[in-house]
Length: 170
Image (tube, rainbow, N blue to C red; front, side, top):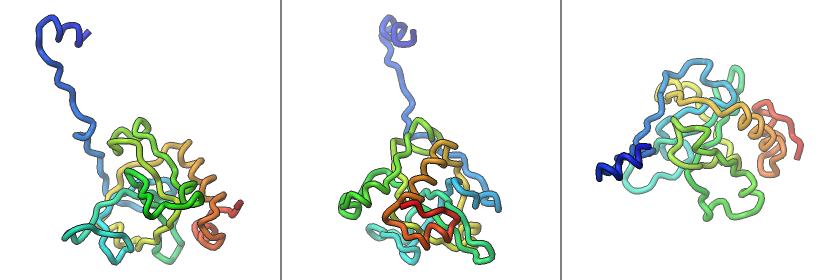
C-alpha cells in the first residue's frame, strides 16, 4: 500500500537501514555468566585477539559457555561477521563455524554472522564485569545446537569441554 501511494504521489519511500539499529545494553550481573548469554566488551592484544591499525582495542560480541566456579574465569566464543579464510582454512575449523541468522537476532546483528566455536577464550570475570555489557541471549534452539556443536567438536579438547561443563562426544 505504501509503495502504491508513493508511486501515485511521486514521493520516494525512505526506508530505515538495518545498520542503524543499536542493541539494548544492560549492566553485567552474575546472571550474565549463564551459558548462551551474549556480551560485548572492548578487547586488547593481551586478550589474544588481533587489532588492526593504530587502535588500542576492539569491541567484540561473544557468547558465554560457562564459568569455572571459584576461579573467576569465563569460557567464551567470539561472534564474527564473516569467516576469515586465512585462519579458518581446514574442514574441521570450518565445521566449527556456527551460523547465527540476523532474523533471529534483529536487535544485535546487522547481517548473518558466525559463532566461532574453533577457539575457546578464557576471560577474567572481573574484567568483564568492569568493562562489558550484556546484549542478549542465544535463542533456545541455537543454544541447544551450539551445545551439540561443542560436544561433537574435533577441534576442542576433551579437557576444554569438561572444564566448562560439556561432554566429549567426538
